[in-house]
Length: 131
Length: 131
DNA sequence: TAAACTAATCGTCTATTGGCGATAAACAAA
DNA sequence: TTTGTTTATCGCCAATAGACGATTAGTTTA
Image: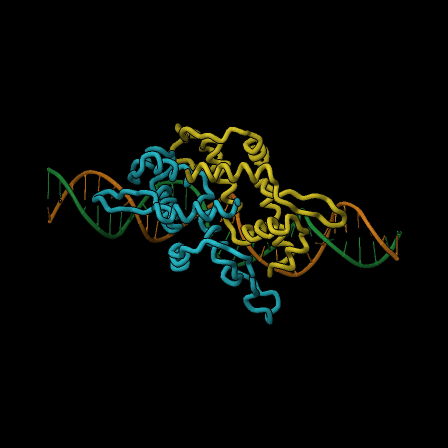
């Protein structure tokens, strides 16, 4: 999963012509389909992955905060949001997995910042999507 | 839920100064918090709602298809995607609830199109979010 | 009216998400 | 080495999401 994410993030191509979902195994009748069994265009999946990471108000707010402060520590966020430390940590993990942020070790703290490279990619993907 | 969505969609203000999450009830100790107990800025929630709707590759692909064809019927999508009719219908419902598409009765079919007004709002929200 | 067609909804199942407290891990400082 | 600080992870739980087949509902057409 992570591999697929980073490979799509590495790509500089952001153009899409058409999608072509295909069957995982059409001989079986009515097998339960999982996400992996349908092939979407690379950009479609990348965009959905970014969108999913943005699909929670706390994560949007975290990113806005990160953008304002340019960077911050996990502990700062725990003070700002009325959520348990473990919950904040979980949201940060998801943002990190999506490639939208990155953590830098500043022992004993960890400084989180926007991942500018992937941010640009996400921006471009949404931009082209909305025309 | 639907009410909150449409009210935010009706708003023409798309500027955000700062978010200010607040406690639902700080006297209770460690009550389980639900989304409704935290107040985010209007735009933060609206953006998250749009993003959530875009957070599945099938829905992205449906929107791209809708954009290409300008409009289409549910049945068309069922032929294009290797998914059950009920599944497609469910995705359409979510896109409709998010305000991204709208259905027009063309008995006995239903023609789905992008909701241009809300599309513009979503576009603006993402645009401002990414600076 | 009856039959056919289209799409939404219902019920069920499994997987994922989002919340929490508790614990573990990593490191600095005493 | 021990202690304190910070953050990640674990285990649990409830709620949501996403898939399906079957059924229902609404319209056309025969």
